[in-house]
Length: 289
Figure (cartoon, rainbow, N blue to C red):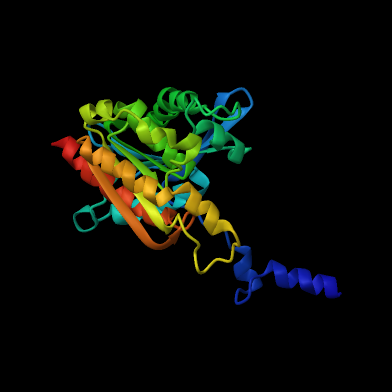
């Protein structure tokens, strides 16, 4: 009897009658859907899409492609959904949000997919192949259900995803009008990307957004992680982000920056996503002129 009572209590949330509980349903984001696409045999990726209501512009929708969709897509899509209703007030245009995430083994795949070649680790260095997957498979497939404007697209990545965004900016600057890197892992491979040739990016006139959190390089006083501060200090994520942004500006690359006070490497994602939506909208307007 006690087990039955416990089961009933757990099955019906407090304050909800059994009749109302029967009518409950999962919460969903209007306009959002997902499907699977394979990069290779046995390597499926979840592709999440939010599409604005109404007919697309003549040239297609502007779009943001968000890496690590499990932590970025819902925050970014809901922000764009709510703020693009009044773009004159918020600065956020109606646009498609595309999130991509490995269907399994996401931690291992992101270490492979988001890192350039040359690191010396056979489990890494797959950025070129992943970039090809985005360009030749993911975006064309999304475009069949939500037409995309090829000139008004942005890439958003955090941490290793931020590293990939900056590598993409330097290696393939024409892929996106804006490359947005949140707390980029520029320490990877001895900070080799810090010395990347920026001339092609400057010539392409593509923009870059670099954001970083206050506690990307120091202990967060609200979190007890003994020894973590030393690891963060050694990686110099704040210093590297500032230095890379300074190089971009000196090279003539349209550069936007933000440092989020009181945030950590993980908690900065919503703030970085919000800034990305606003900066992307600003860049897309300039590309439309």
